[in-house]
Image 1 (cartoon, rainbow, N blue to C red):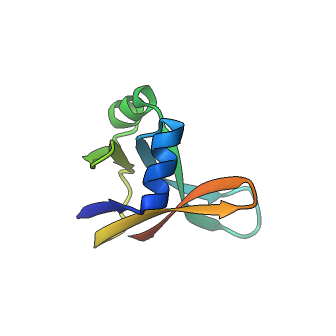
Image 2 (cartoon, helix red, strand yellow):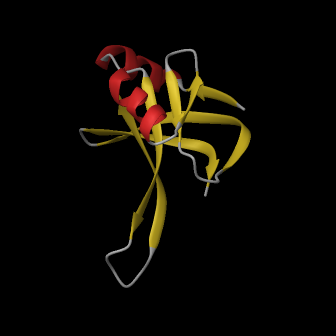
Length: 100
């Protein structure tokens, strides 16, 4: 599996000093409807080590830093692409290639 970043995301990561991305499974179990989705965020080096050591995440090295993958069964395409989504003044990570 190969991880790629769009130029917009690489520029944003460089400008903000970010280098590690965590892929997490978010679930709502406090409502009548069960919703599970993937959640992506930037994590610092010390939290990446915590995820690896305590939560058993897998660290995959990339051109920028690490992608932290959870110990859950996910489906991965041969190439996973991370991109930057801009909504007004907010920025978030989106991806193509990982599915529940």
